[in-house]
Amino acid sequence: MNIPLSNGKLLPIEMHKIKIVQKTSLPPASQRLRAIEQAGYNTFLLRTRDVFLDMLTDSGTNAMSDAQLSAMMVADDAYAGSESYYRLADAVSDVLGFEYTLPVHQGRAAEHLLAKTFVKPGSIVLMNYHFTTSKAHVELAGGAVLEIFGDEAMNTHSADPFKGNLDIQKFRDAIAKYGADKIAYVRMEATTNLIGGQPFSLANLREVKAVAAAHGIPLVYDASLISENAWFIRQREPGYADRSIRDIMREMMSLVDIVYLSGRKSTAVRGGLIATNNKSYYDRILVWLPVYEGFATYGGMSTKEVEAMAVGMREMTDETVAGASADLIQYFVDRMVEAGIPAVTPAGGLAGHVDAKRFLPHIPQSQYPAGALAAAIYIASGVRSMERGTISTDRDANGNDVLADLELARLALPRRTYTLSHVEYTVDRLKWLYQRRDLVQGLTFVDEPPVLRFFFGRLTPINNWGAQLAAAFEADFGPRY
Ligand code: F0G
Image (tube, rainbow, N blue to C red; front, side, top):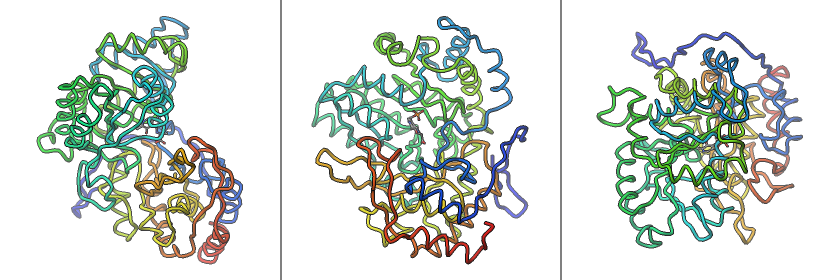
């Protein structure tokens, strides 16, 4: 939450106190260099003992509340009919307004079941933007993804408050071109992850619903970051400033046919779910639930996580929770912009993002500037970020690289986990790196998996630039940091 200071500035203040901590340590630059070399310049392959601040993701890394932890102690361990499930289903009904809840082990499992149920060979799924796993499951089921975002979505230096909006004219054009029968569903991702956590507006969702309903196309909502999207609607959309987060969520959900989420983000647990009011959709998805996930009342989650999710579902409607990460990210982005670092604007949900094309303009996309930037940030700071660019986009059927729309290094701020001094430290090291950016060069693959290659791929730095960067850092800060 932001609190106004006497100098007129806003301070993102923590509306919680810290009761349990995990010790962290700052490995010096020489150790960081060794670690990133062993990790094949892929931050996914670092061990956390070598990481100071883990900004890889906000997935499954958020601080849980005391109420969530205590709920875990009363979990009802039953294979079938667990009371924990009914507490989760009640929370989904109260908060989101859906009668049928299918638990799954995490968000991509929901995507798998939806694709299995609705996507046939030749189907098209329309999206405001894809997420890596959402696209993979549609394609594995024989379908194709068509993204229909607006012109401003790919502008990383923008003032557009809703870059996650779906382009309604392109939606109509796609229906005219392919026919509504071929469109399995239209998927709206709350705060579109891969383009910088950018929200869509309620006005846009209403229009999407009107067009989808007119053509009998189901509207699927990826709610992994629903509380952040609701938070931005309240801050940015005219007419919503005085509405509660809960109210805004309910209004969004009233337009949706199927909602699914990774519970690892907004609800701060390790799990996921699908929910709907459509009994026929529920019945069709339910067929696959025990085959791939688990029985209908646990769906591959531990009952402890089911309990914690029920609590997290209610807590994410609290504005001090919904805005906990968003306001700190806004501060982070403002500080980066002040320091001249090319951060993605406006600030979004889940992370501060740095535009690698602008940070490292001398590296061609074929040499993976965002991957190089993520590795360089780690060498310069011990902060682990994630590449969201061409490495995160798999090759096409002919084996050619598909150059990503954006090349971003994503520095996630898990909810209630890091503090203002962590953000200040990160901005300072990014500033140092920006001054030394000429030292950073590109990467080439040495080991490249065929699907979702960003997870396990190994790369090598062109001209051994990592060692030069670590040496420059040590010359400026000494061997201890
Ligand atoms: N949808 C969105 C919008 C996501 O951000 C994610 C995961 C998923 C679906 C898949 O959920 O991980 O629980 O299986 N995002 C993580 C991230 C991995 O780091 O942004 P999952």
